[in-house]
Image (cartoon, rainbow over all chains, first blue to last red):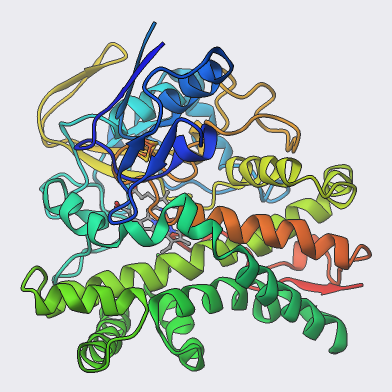
Length: 64
Length: 397
Ligand code: HEM
Ligand code: SF4
């Protein structure tokens, strides 16, 4: 699985961090998404897909 | 033809104070998009299905700009400056990002001990005081008001002033001139506070906003507007979720037992999402206007047409939530649209979640015999509010 995030689209709602804190975080200075793990392990896949589905800004892309 | 369209907002059924108005909920069966008639005779689209609501709220040609012709107003519009909730990107994003850092999941989680102390102390006071007591006044309003005051750097001593004025501001039935006066006084109040913070900056969010004024990135008026938005949105909504949520739980004792019987944070967090879904207190719908023709669900929304996304009905979409009219704290409700969707999705949602988790996870465990001190038919519901809830909730134990 390959994850990408679009910082320009992100509105900092933090849904991704709530769901998969090992994959996503938010920048200290402005709350914009920080991708911690671009190729998360198997165990994270379901949560990452859910994060992409609930992200209000469509800022998370998942391939594979 | 417009005479036959259903009026929006609709009227709730007397016996089902937690359900959307039946005539509006029934429109979901007619398809994702139908037309409704508003107070001013306009006939915007009403979107009732979850998938189409998310698609439109995330659509780049859908505008939240209240000044655009065709925007479906909930009451006569007042002239004057606007906060970013009623603006489009890029200006919306520019302003939202100035305050977003204060609401990250991590930053807010750090406030948990402080919120727990506030809740514990208010419950101590409740238990030491007379009963019955109005839970709204004694608990539901103070919790989020104390928290947002601390975060913004607003003196809590002024709570009667800002709570009363917020209530006037968000009542649909408030006459326009009264609403303008209340809004004006709140704006003046925040403007004075921004002035104070410019002279004596503190370690609070309003001081950070004031810094932007000093840096020339915001006008004084924009800063004050932002302060009004954060103060009003930061206490009214959560207060209503606390009181209405408590009432809903008292009416569903089997569900209340789930909360009383568990101290698992996951169970409490799940319960918060389900109560947000089921109660969906922002019952006037998300309001938007199309900037271009948009094809969706076999219909065409024309440029300049108003769109109302009824998120209360979207949260009852059986395609997404089986048995949607049941309150079921065990379900996975995370895809609810109670905080909206798209780039305007609630900025304060991590804070709202934290406050509700602490409240729902503490109140009923500490007062397991909590009970209504009046009949359901005597409870005054906020049918006339932009935000749904109860004006009073007499309880005893
Ligand atoms: C349970 C409590 C809450 C509920 C149900 C709620 C609901 C909502 C909804 C539905 C929106 C979207 C508006 C739209 O799309 O037109 C919104 C936006 C907003 N909320 Fe909340 N809210 C809550 C608590 C809070 C808190 C505690 C704050 C703290 C300051 C807050 C601040 C905001 C702000 C600033 C916006 C505007 C965001 C933007 O336009 O980008 N809310 N809220
Ligand atoms: S859920 Fe989406 S909008 Fe929210 S912080 Fe994550 S990437 Fe940004």
